[in-house]
Length: 305
Image 1 (cartoon, rainbow, N blue to C red):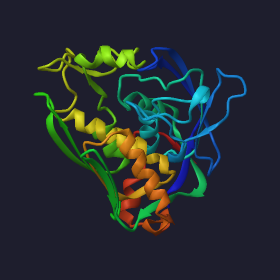
Image 2: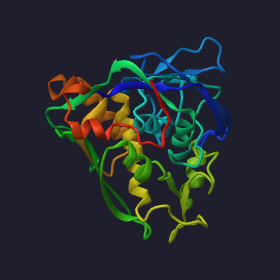
Image 3: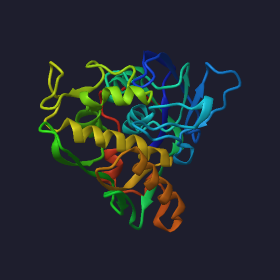
């Protein structure tokens, strides 16, 4: 049986916001079953809790933001992807600034933090969103869709007019181990020529070669190069996992994206939730043994019951 999960103990980490450039402290606490992922800004008096769900998403310009106004919490996608990747359903998250720290630009630092903290099984069965019909959204030649499948599968295509990227496509079938080894280490990326424009918009104030892949007009500028040959599309899959986790369940369905981003991912999530005939919420016990096995944690992670 696959049970809901939380953290074995509280943990904290400090880092820099990619867009705000501000130093921020992030604390994660265990939570009871059916709590979900709940954020709170502790730097603001009378701040309200922000439940991590697709309907609460505000801005999607170069990141996924929960809420709006003074209570908004920016760049949640990499942390959410890491939580989904380890099957952690329930956690309280306190943050003393406007943005989740970018760490190294991937989900790997959060995976390491969660592995060291340990995971606790709760005495409540997981529930899955099983897709039963195709849902699709399109915008300006870009699109994203979800269709029935036994497990979460992400088929992602990106297209960039840059010699180091061009067209990349990757199909990823979810398991906790595959997420850790194949997706979590893929970093965010950007073009050097866009930096001034983004800074005028109030973005990438904390960006550097330490927390992003940076490309000039011809090549990758990071001295260490790429972690994967197709690290760019793997990072798109990381973003997709974080964004679709906002539907509130682990998912059995195939997500296909073409030149998508946070905005399209959120449109897809909202349309799925609006189309109640397109999915069923089921107990993990009803899933195949293969899918249940994919969602088990590898031995490298400490688990308590």
